[in-house]
Image (tube, rainbow, N blue to C red; front, side):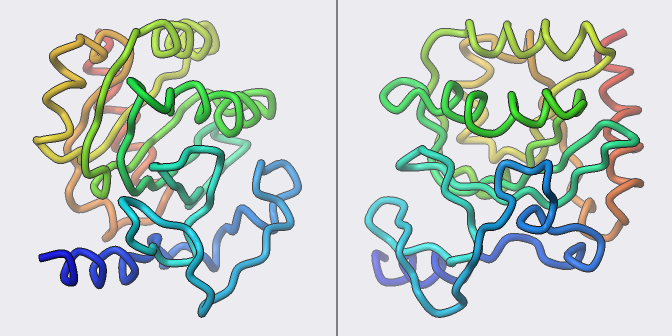
Length: 195
């Protein structure tokens, strides 16, 4: 089982079919501007298993990400996550906010789509960072949506009522659409949730 998990972790790449449209390392307004990647050097790990080198480290020891698209005209970003989201021990929400989303918010991004299909576990702590994030983006007509979080990861998220601040959405076919269409679909779903 451990060998299978190890092989799977290093083979999971961030979604790459939109790279001709956007790359965070070439976006001067992105927190990851100027990053360089190796296709062969595996250095980051989750549960001591190496992950693909295209994932971005942002200060968490258990959660990694890739900004797949940011559109400054439509004020949205799509971020893919992998690993364990652990607020109880690592305070990952604080790190995510300070190192990534607050910087994007300062650039005018008010609508955040977090693709969470590869979030293996979620462990909650207090809800203040979520409440603050919700209030901040709502003032600008924005929202935060977590898309396709696995059922086992949703359990603690729902139990601690974080859905009061962040929408949990299922949108399994997102890969078959262009990023603007993904945004518009999720924007419509969030508008219905917020009504």
